[in-house]
Image (cartoon, rainbow, N blue to C red; front, side):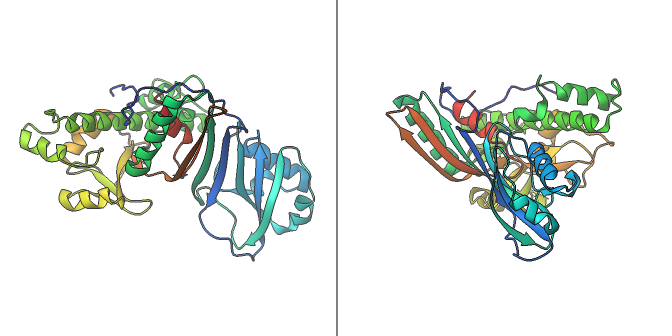
Length: 355
């Protein structure tokens, strides 16, 4: 597998601002997958927490009401170094104690009921509010332009640094486990390391696709796609930044079935209309794979294993409801945006800061 440095899609130079990821400057609100019915045996709590992990939150709620930690339901894990809100479910037998609780850094914003327990993945995505400090007028203009471009064109959906561990080397351990040169008896750790390795391969493949797109924008011949320049020219004439190839795996956006790109002209229209997106493979057995030139590129980076269950992930996403405001007197740049589930606000920040 080739090792590639993160490639940014935006072209501006790096921006130097002050950003301290804490509850004053980083706010996250969960967007639930569905409306709660208002009836049923499950109590739904809308909870805001500060400087706590989701596990910390659930542990404290458990201690207050006496329910077991495993009895709580939640859709996703939220950052510790932030002010976050999310929905938690528990049997309504515990309602009285929970609603009467008064816990530090935890506030119950509201409650309702539902017929089912909240499960992992039961969310559309998350809404983020972020504040940069020490932003001068020139960087304000660069940030504003970057956000406008992302609103129009979308952005690469890299896995964030959180996926790779404190020392950024979890993927190396996962690679060794799959190669049989490292034994890991702890199943949770083993799965974590292997997942990091899958994520690293995905990120390297995506970086390379962005490099190719930049080259095609400049009409540079790409022999590893096809030796015929006319075919490369067909790709370079695509209006959008991220170029789509014959044989790519695409998916209906923001959710839906995945399929191979067999009619490029038709699929280009849908991609440009944000009805579909390019999908990137997570290594493992999968009934669908990319074809032709797209597969040649994929095979440079994605090392499959019969021991893994493969899947696909959106390689390109379209953040929604982007807004921003510059407070010149304080030199603060504040902005908000929504990301689909599984996407990282940190990669959004890295893209616009180029660092």
